[in-house]
Image 1 (cartoon, protein in one colour):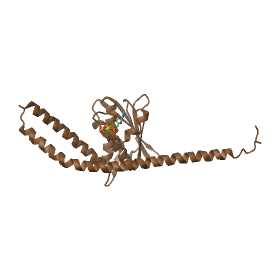
Image 2 (cartoon, protein in one colour):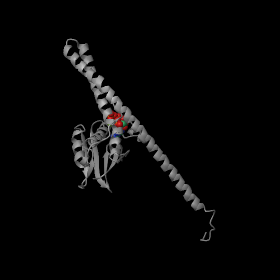
Image 3 (cartoon, protein in one colour):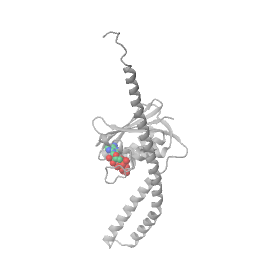
Image 4 (cartoon, helix red, strand yellow):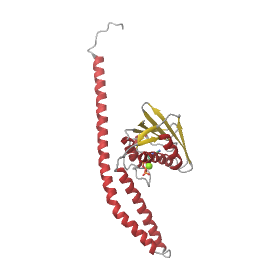
Length: 253
Ligand SMILES: Nc1ncnc2c1ncn2[C@@H]1O[C@H](COP(=O)(O)OP(=O)(O)OP(=O)(O)O)[C@@H](O)[C@H]1O
Ligand SMILES: [Mg+2]
């Protein structure tokens, strides 16, 4: 009917209030969730640092011992030689794990420098993935520099490219986009691999989450830690046509 309808118990206002309260509740839930996650990460960092430190001494002793034994056992003893190879490879793996742990325990520190993301990603496209994987970097010529910690950022983007390459079985194309986005820089890394089922897209960032037989599950947790230390964000979606697309937003220099 016309414009003469009587105000019906202020319903529209109530509805607006209810809506506002619902939004507030969601915001609070999100904040609490983020706080919990930050706390979990802090605790994990603490443990990781401790483990890395404790592993280092016995591991060094073991590697020296393995090295000595390998010099004295001749090739005549096949079984001993094989066992020594296994020991050498496994101590090497532990050493790598200890390195990642100690890295995880350390937030980027020290002075920042100017980092050109296009240069960095172009360079990694040649060095961080096997030759059968082509990395195309799309940038529209704008300056894509930020003030940051070069080594941790390099490590983080290398991890993302390595994951992308692994998801494609070590061959194919990874499309990298870099562009200015308001006051920030947006990077997208799109692969055409297996993709990540929707219900796992949050969990892949958790420490130890892995679907790989030889994975540590620390890669993406470390990536997110580095991005957040730069006040950035990282999310993952599906690549149109299949695959995973990681989006990173960082603030520009
Ligand atoms: N580009 C991707 N495509 C499909 N799945 C991915 C991709 N990146 C990550 N994942 C999934 O997320 C999981 C966690 O990745 P993360 O890098 O943290 O550890 P990882 O790769 O399994 O082990 P590591 O990095 O130590 O080799 C992977 O095991 C995989 O299931
Ligand atoms: Mg990985």
